Image (tube, protein in one colour):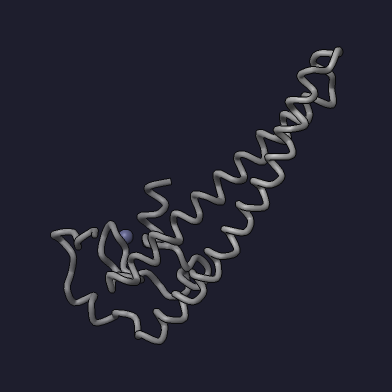
Length: 136
Ligand SMILES: [Zn+2]
């Protein structure tokens, strides 16, 4: 588990989120995780169909027809959407671990409290606005 940075100001702990607030975010994160999991499963079903279509077009006597190449593009797009969703699941899981560690709502980089408004928009956020901007 990630510890507090050495320069972490312990007085920030006074702003620790109330248990009821954390529970509310935890519920949202668990629901979000279920939703994302369903999205991934749906993509995997679609990709399976795309793979089958692709292998049958390989046997086609007309190589590189427009339909097949647009299918490949679609397939690549689906893969990247799936990857983004998996990344998001990773973030949600990470935020849930922060909750279990009692560190939810505290920036992992600077140790400051993450504004509740930010958590409302991005419940899986484990960085303050400034640090998230630096990483991106
Ligand atoms: Zn920060």
